[in-house]
Amino acid sequence: MEENYVPSLLASFYHSLPHVNITFQLVNSTFNPRSDIYLESLGVAASVPAVWLLLTLLVLLSYLLSRCCDKQLKQGRSLYCHRWVLGVTAFICSATVAVGLYGNDDVHNAFVRLSTTLRAVQHNIDAVKDHSQSLKVNLETQSFPLADRLTEVVEGKILPNVTIQRLATELLHGTTANINRSTEDVNLLYGRLMPKSPLPPFLAIFDAVELYRWPITMGLLSFFILLCLILIFGVVRRIRCLLVMFAVLGLLMIIISWCTASIYIALAMAMGDACIDPAGVVERLVANQYGIDIADYYIHCPIDGVVKESGPLNTFVRQARLNIEKSEQLVAEFALLAEVHYSPKDVQPSLDKLTRSLKTATQNLATLAGLVDCAPIHRRYLDILDVTCRKALFGLTFMLGSAVGAGLLFTILVWVDSHVWIYLRKRKGYLQVAEADPFLPLSSSAGSSSRGAQGGSLSRPSLNPPQTYSSAGTYPGRHAHYRHTHTPPQTPPFPGTMNGRGSHNRHEQPSAPPLLLGPNNGQYPTLSKSCKTLESSDFY
Image (tube, rainbow, N blue to C red):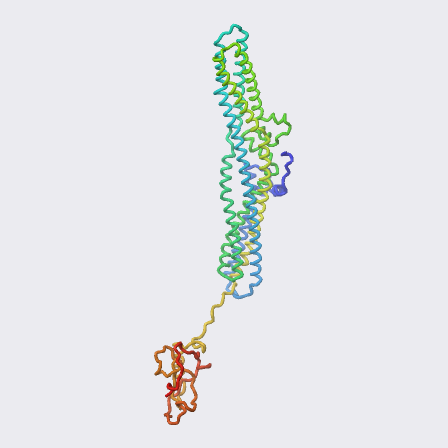
């Protein structure tokens, strides 16, 4: 099954990327995390986005300094195209970051499956060790002492027939010897798995990193999308403070995008190198702990039954099982002799216990044979290949593309945004209206200016006395308690009025103040809320 594995296109692409050391010389691209030269090549690849980040920040800093030092900034120039560029680019940037969210979710699901599969492999290893230890204890504490006790009973009782006694003794000695050989085989099996497995500490670190990596990445990418939406809102509403805020936070987003791109490119290249020859990678990792023969057996897992039974661990189980089966045969033959030549109360209790103990050992060996079989481990190995070299690498590619695209788009956004907010025209406030506006109520300043105009005008006689009215339209003597008094326009003398009678005083009066510009002598012709209708008695 493993021979049918074909590396994916992504794995081949990342593996084909040049692996160079710090002097830009090509090095071996075979995955080897224990090699300093190989790790150096990954570091050089990760430094490419970092160098691009430094150049980007240098260009943006130079542009901002040039704008800040420009003393001939022309406010209010047309920014229609710039605003469109900001809006469209921000929308595209949001979509690019959303691709990173999709890739992050794929990587998380793949890593969860990988952790589950590796735990299943470790559980299988622990189960083999536990069953072999349990079988060893059973043989050493039950089977062997019972067989030894029966041997003492037989040797302690002399039978008339020496041949029968010698045969019974040989049967029990053979049983004891087979139990000892079976115990040795189980010890050898346990000894092959005795080295400490590297999976538990690796899984502890792996799960802890993934526990924080996934939500932090989701939060950062979601925050990037939110800032893009805020930028769109600020562009549409022409809110300068939002544009300035995005220009500042945009620099931080550029740094985060290119730093994550550095990490992603190094991981992608390492995974591509590992997925080109996964069998060799696993063999090198497992051989240091359990031996090359065990690694090769479980990676390739032969289909032929005879070859399959000849696995390194299967050999110990099969040999121990043969020894136990021989012991059961010898015990069965001894039971036939004991029924005739020995007292049941002397041998039967120990004989029954020995039979049950050997039967339990046979069952444990059958279970152990299923645990050391290569088929379950090989299926998990193929599952690990599918999760790591296809799903995880596919999602990581999305995250890498999203980080690179977001870094470029955020650079454009910060550049254009800085240009826009510098030249953006401030919103005009309300017009400042003069206090002497003809459509505003008379204020103190207006009154003073009116008085100034009155003092500066020529005095000439008038035939009519000055007439002032309150806001209710009466003489000042009436309703003088009202606060606001206004001077309505002069009313020409009509017959029937006070000025129209010839008997009234016609002596010269001081001239009235000149009329202000506009209708109603520059004042609103308003009436007070307590307006009183003029009656004929008011004029007499």
